[in-house]
Length: 308
Image (cartoon, rainbow, N blue to C red; front, side, top):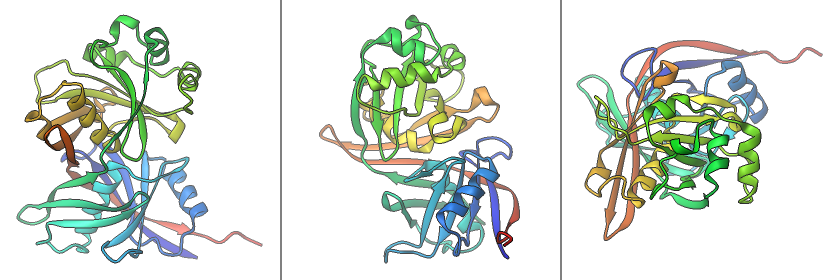
């Protein structure tokens, strides 16, 4: 019998019981892929991370990320939350300005900002996003995301697949009310994506409608195909979202260095995902997604061998 400690955190928030929930097993050596998937399913959180000794010289750890149904090559809240868990366990130097984690996409740099007594903020550097197919059938798109065609922002904001490691379908809507009203019709979504030779993908709906907050966009993410019916805070979608907004002039180059995606409000778990892009001469050079995290609990998982 083996016992593995875990830490529960809320990420993209500094208030317990808001943001996105995460479990981190900081000493996962000895667990195989099958058992990790079973533990992630048992946790029943959007993601669970498993920390192993480093497998590349420049990294401090190898981190594997699982939803209840599959492993992900990268994700934002698990990366940031894992760094906070390691900092809380004093496995990071308090003076360090960065930590490099080994993810499924390779070594990933996380910038660290420290407060007087603990880690205050973390910035994940993400791969430069790639832009995929545009979905032009507005009637089919609206039906797939449970809104009316008139709710789509349209104009210069196309419905498009964009990825920094995990692809999402980005759907711009006219209003926050339309974002709140959205729901995924999986059959229609799959049929829509088959028209551009894609399998089912998670969907990120958002609106640039301003309100009495500092959010650049108001958003929701639906990912039933990756075991997450709805996610309150999707860091992996943040970098591609920022690149999308910059490409289609929804934000200026100056404002692209300080964006906020307000997500999870409809679920009662508001998350603030910070996005910072650096561009020169119209070329995107760096993409960072950042946020805070708070520990809300801890416990142990008992890995009991099966009886003969």
